[in-house]
Length: 214
Image (cartoon, rainbow, N blue to C red; front, side, top):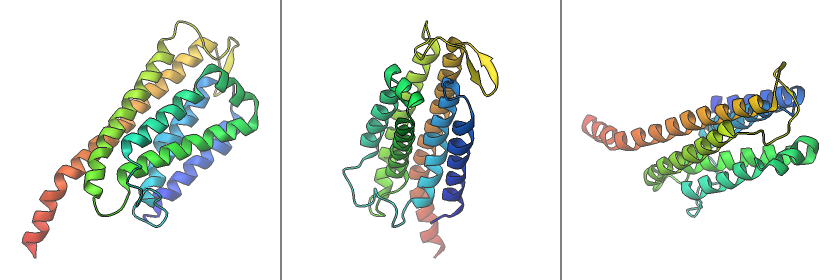
């Protein structure tokens, strides 16, 4: 286990859940989106990098748990919890708020582990599939972020909210949250896909160099 990564991931979760989410205005969509993206695109990949290849890597041996399937699962989790009725329930009932965050973490961990982890045999092919899984995730995250940012009316209430201490209208709050999702979703998942592709393409070259140096 590469210890610094999961430690950093858990520390990030602590800041997001017991810092931002606990003390900020939970009615703010922007606050929700910062926490959401921090979980799935920050803490989850860090923890996954630490668990990859260890006994805690639950994707190892589960060949059916492909990156594309994990990406589709995350799509349903993310889009489902952003239905206006589900947002209202999550904001007003603690048990649903906890379930939402745990589902985001589980979906994110599954996706990143399915791309970076798995059994040692066939890992390169799995990572190549992970490129497509992460690119697909980047697309559906970007699409949802754009829809939220460009919506002509607020979907999650009409009242003014406090976004990290700054009073803003519901429409501006939703647009800000959509932009956060659009930017982070595009950058992080795209960067992950590019990193996987680069590692996969460079692996044979590195292998030949090691063989020649023996």
